[in-house]
Amino acid sequence: MAYPKLEINLSKIYHNGKLLVEMCEKKGIEIAGVTKVFRGNPEIAKVLVDAGVSMLADSRIENIKKLKDIEIQKMLIRIPMLSEVEELVEYVDISINSELEVMDKISKEALRRNKVHQIMLMIDLGDLREGLWEDEIDSTVEQVLMMRGIQLAGLGANFGCYGGIVPERHTLEKLINIKQGIEKKYNISIPYLSGGNSNSLHLIWEEQMPEGINHLRIGYPFVLGKEDVYDQVIEGLYGDAFRLYGEIVEIKNKPSVPIGKRGIDAFGNMPEFIDRGIRKKAIVALGRQDVRLEGIMPKDDNVTILGASSDHLILDITDTETIYGLGDIMEFTVNYGALLAAMTSDYVEKEIIK
Ligand SMILES: *Cc1c(COP(=O)(O)O)cnc(C)c1O
Image (cartoon, rainbow, N blue to C red; front, top):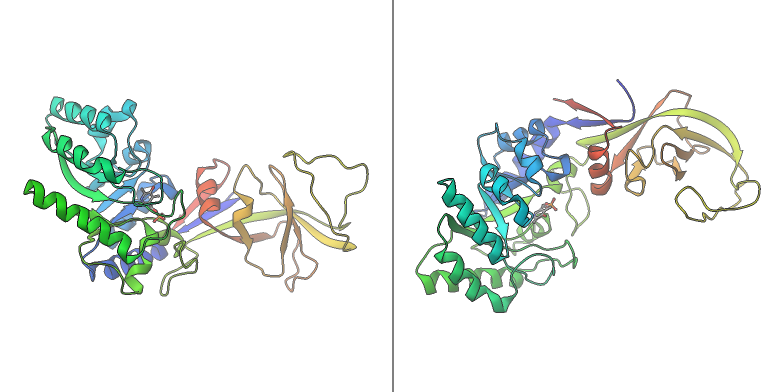
């Protein structure tokens, strides 16, 4: 097996999935399992389906295409580009939307293909990324309801992505009120009310999730056992379903401050060094082409990351209890950003274990 390697433990992901699905089910909430952090890998996505998610969701049609053999509703969770509407209607059942011009194009494309595409209208409740602003909801809904080939299947909101807004009970109650207002005015029923991403999960543990929210779009906690609000592994979940490994290619005692005339490093920065004397250092064959190094942590608490370039990770191993040798494999935990980068890098071997 080649290194660097990302090990993906399917039974841990299944365990995380099952627990989250059951937790949400108790509150009448379905989960769209978000596959973007593992690039729509169908083997991993299948595990989420087995665990009981009711849809698979991704921000890229490219990833959703990989899921076409899995029998389940597919959702696009990035507002579609005008230029991808044809593919959207072909591969995706339900998409989040905020622009009438796009929805009009979807409507025409769906009619042409004799299909009905489901629309989840996004409402911006303060995070300031995608979604309708309050004053345009009424007129938008009115026009969407007149379009053929599309069905208004839901309303949704997103949090914690641009504005870093944490949803509260009253925030989601506002969404519920908007939905009820529309249903009453037009005498329709809107099936889904999607209360956000993993940033909304805390409302469940805190018993603050208002009744009426029946859908969430969840990705992060399945893979890393965490969400951003509490930023710690959720009780009962595995935080290490993904593990990163790299191989040591050099071990030497060297000074802690570089010798010679100082210039900038390979990335245009002027790094600072503290003189801690001669230290025992290891180089691991792992670099910025493989992973987002700010997002990895050595599993061994006594190892510190000193720096990195495109292909080398420089570690201080002076204070470790384990005696490391050349060729040894070192393990790292990954955060969301690092996982995304490692999944995206062709240089990182992916090993799926069951
Ligand atoms: C990424 C994303 C999600 C999933 O967020 P997690 O934090 O991974 O649970 C949900 N909704 C939208 C619109 C997203 O872009």
